[in-house]
Amino acid sequence: MKKLQYFEYEGLTLASAGGRLPQGSRPAERGEGPVCWLVERDPMTSRGFFPVRDARDLTGPEHWTRLDANRLDPAEPLPAGFAVNTAFPDVLARQRRFQQCLARPQKRLTLVGLGDVGGQLLTALKLLGTELEEIGVYDPNEALCRRYALELDQILDRPLPRIVIRPAEALFDCELFLFTASRGVPPLGSRGDVRMLQLEQNREMLKHYSRQAREAGFSGLFCQISDPVDQLARCVFLQSNRDENGRFDFRGLLPEQIAGFGLGVMMARAAHMARRLGADCPRLRVYGPHGADLVVANDPEGYDPVLSQELTRRTVGANLEVRELGFKPYIAPAISSAALSILALLRGEPFLGAVPMGGVYFGCRGRLTGWGQELVAEPLHPELAARIEAAWSRLKEAEPQCLV
Ligand SMILES: NC(=O)c1ccc[n+]([C@@H]2O[C@H](COP(=O)([O-])OP(=O)(O)OC[C@H]3O[C@@H](n4cnc5c(N)ncnc54)[C@H](O)[C@@H]3O)[C@@H](O)[C@H]2O)c1
Image (cartoon, rainbow, N blue to C red; front, side, top):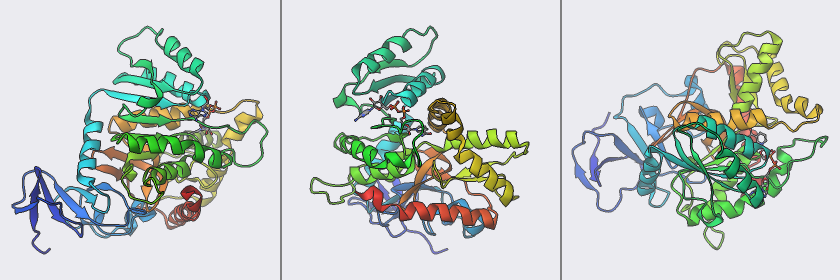
């Protein structure tokens, strides 16, 4: 490998991998700490920052193939650290603020939308999120806010997070912003995908919050939970990155500051269906969107197409089984997709969620660090890889719906 030239900048060791050096950086020996690699890539389809363990992380396209260890180049040694994409203005400072936000020992959350999913999620976080400092709630229905602030403050146990009502103008005074609001979940008996039916209205509703995040200079994580999760996560990115004239300036949320939470319940439903089928699947996997294009695999390498397709079919339809009983399914989603996944993320553990991948938010297993999303790559059976590619491509084709 060619000898690398390092630079010093505000206590960081920088090395260019095609990205622009910030003004004020000067040539230096490599310091003790991690190396910050500078890359310059199209901000519409590339990440803002990401961990680098070896040369593979700096090369290769930014799409679903990153999940398949068979398709990654052989690992070439490289000083470890992280990469920042200098196509995003001021990216070094923004990455640093995000890292500081995640490192705060006691987190403040804001939860917007106190309907069935929001209420259930709040209760779960109150009981399970013992390390959280405060959860601020907001819903246009003030009585709902007061109800939850009163009821959840009447639970005797310590230490538990405080529940407070967050004023509309202070929604982003937090490290994590959780969004479960919806302009209307289709009623029982509705035909079609109840998630996609909400796209247009929820996309419009989100505009206000995406813009507020930008104006507040929000440095934390925007967790998108209402449907359709994956498309709306992309909408938040696009909406927050336009200037007053509607032009993209990429001064809003970085791609890593947004994650979609809908895959957790799909994994739990797939495990439930495997038990009902009597199938033993210790390496069960789920990928892709929280909806019709979900991919369930009995095993990433020992992939059985018949069993996996059957598990997928049953998992995708699992919500209808509850709807047929006359109930809207929201308990398992609020707990599996949101509460457990978000707490795992906060604890630095692997979590299931939709993360930025080549211009879409794609569901997979990852781990969030102050340096960005670490994806779990493992060898994939070719038939499984083909299904993942198809799901990723369909999300990508549908991207124009997020641009509006
Ligand atoms: N991620 C998942 O795994 C998952 C699973 C199930 C459902 N969902 C989705 O979660 C969303 C919420 O479902 P629900 O059953 O709680 O719906 P709900 O109708 O019970 O609640 C929606 C809430 O949003 C609030 N709201 C409406 N407009 C708002 C606005 N402009 N700002 C803030 N809040 C506003 C309403 O007052 C209401 O409290 C839906 O999109 C649903 O499809 C997600």
